[in-house]
Image (tube, one colour):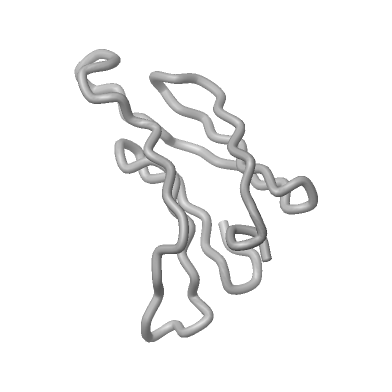
Length: 80
């Protein structure tokens, strides 16, 4: 998902990533949340597979195959 110059991504075992693309030739990672717990879950579990954004409340809703629903509270860096 993208809002303005930020891209918000669910990345399976790499968790949630927020990337600043204000300079498309040099995107930069500005926030990261690791949802994966090494050794947790069964073989084949994928981790984070979906996110939804609530910029007004600065929240990221995360669907994770091992941990379930996570609600991340962000700051002004993540939601400028």
